[in-house]
Length: 218
Image 1 (tube, rainbow, N blue to C red):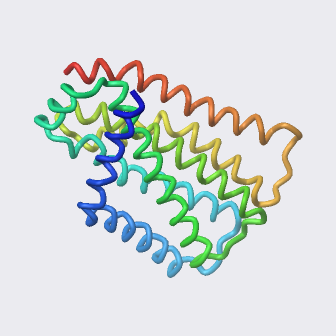
Image 2: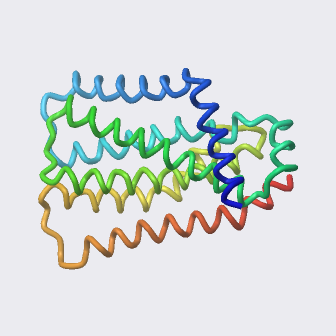
Image 3: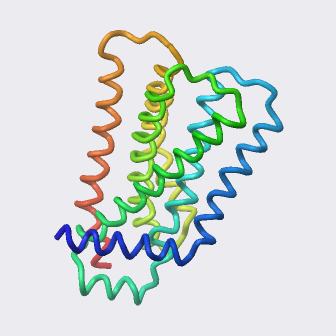
């Protein structure tokens, strides 16, 4: 099973290298957005910096993950249907989008820290939270992309369906990331919030594994 999962993952990575314009387009979106913020804001406090960072991560994920299923033609999906199971296919997509979003999140963090005033006290902790957050956001929007792909390829559905699901996770990430700005938390609160985010990720993965086979049959 895992051999086929990694084969499908390798296929997506190979396509990304062949269609570099998509990857560079996302990088351009990240760089231009952060540069506009740099020109617009003289100085930002920690709360504004943190909020802007996570809002931008949300839009980056929508742009990066939206093409995950929408780029697959009906004929190609029929071919995948004949060589792989739905669980293997959705796991490969989840892994690919997870890796892509973690990379984009780290690039975004580096540009944020370079162009805008960096109020983060514990950069290592914040980087770990960014990786955790990028993984969680990508998992949610991968499932939304799979659903939207079956609704006449309507990419707008990704944002509509994903917003109520991602909102609590985004609020938890904003709250959790405040620990890297030297904000004092009650003992155990950091582990509790991290556990909640990880639990939400596991829940969405479980939903994807349960629901996607029904979408796959369509």
